[in-house]
Each structure stands twice: as C-alpha cells, then as structure tokens.
Image 1 (tube, rainbow, N blue to C red):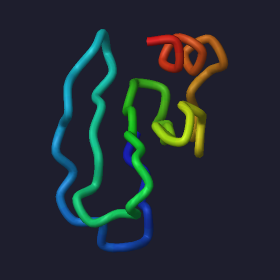
Image 2: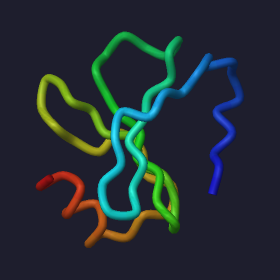
Image 3: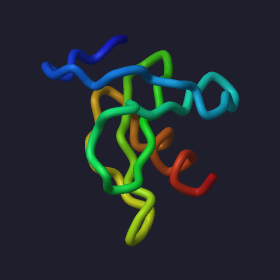
Length: 71
C-alpha cells in the first residue's frame, strides 16, 4: 500500500527493515522527529518525541501497532 501524502515530501530513505516492515522518513517533511513504517497491511506514522506515539494509521491492526511501539 502506498499512501499519497498530497505534497512533495522529497526522498524517502529507508532507515532499516525489521520483519516485514520498512522504516523510513521523508527528507523534506516536518521537523518533529518521527518515522513512517510500511507493512503489507498499511502504513503508520510514529512520533519519536516528546514520547513514542502513533501520529497516523492507515490500515495497520492494533496488534501490529502495539508490536511496533514496543519495539
């Protein structure tokens, strides 16, 4: 699943891969630290500060979100 953000977010380098998930960021997105995670079921944006939290979810199941947040 590819989510169209509707804006030119620049490049999206992969930070790392874990299980079936790709962790990445957009090079010209907002300054607040976060990471996007792409899996087979969807994509989630996770804030990294001031605490780790779900910013936006597109199709990930609750169990997947919990696993990603714990990891």
